[in-house]
Length: 292
Image 1 (cartoon, rainbow, N blue to C red):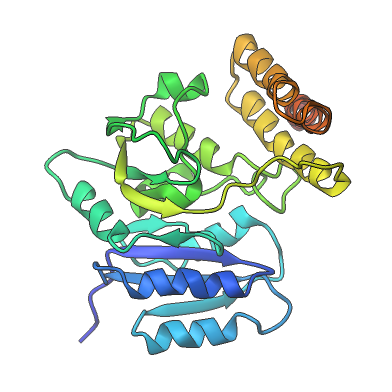
Image 2: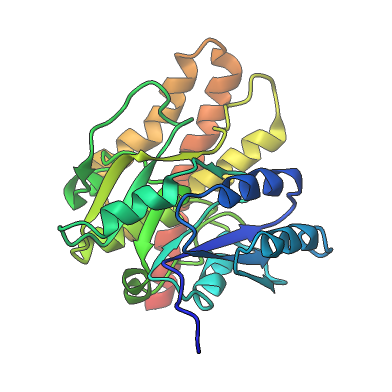
């Protein structure tokens, strides 16, 4: 007799991590709602992930381990989506961790009276002091980039919605040229499609926030440039207004110059501004070549 499919499919793309995987598994083993499967998309060239896959299996977590020679966060998640069986999909990072009732809280909201296509949890380190009220996400505010944070680690979406949208755009996200913005793009496409998404602060996900460099660090600057190109691609792909683009390209420099370390963080902000502008222009140029 076939087993009932799990309610959640957790798609974990991982590369270059070891200890952080143990922390995530600790929190998965303690979940009060156990109706989930774990799909590990392994982008490592070695077997570092194998002991954690065995540990998850030994903890009675249904686990699928698949390797991907191609690196790229969105590509890996799309690969995992092709294997998912759950009604709801989520995308934990390999260095994030869940509070013990995350899945129970997400399920409570998704099975409520209102038809909800997905819920967005609260990234605690991103907003540690302010408890925002639950609300429905609005396309208008999101298209103006005023909708708040919806990190991919905090998304719990019905699989049917993600499939209808065509999954993640694998031109965006870590490992791609436009190395960020994949979750913003997905949320914008969902809202444009009429999906009902709600922010629920009781769903608590943790992930250490990367701080701007406090010293001269060319590698950190280059990483900022790559990620900023993803934000610029979002400007172009979703045809955002000139005001949104201007605000977004100027604000990193202003924030850096107003910080306690204006020289280093000002340069860091400049990399962010240039990256956003270049990302937007390079995306538009790609579109122009495709139409030619």
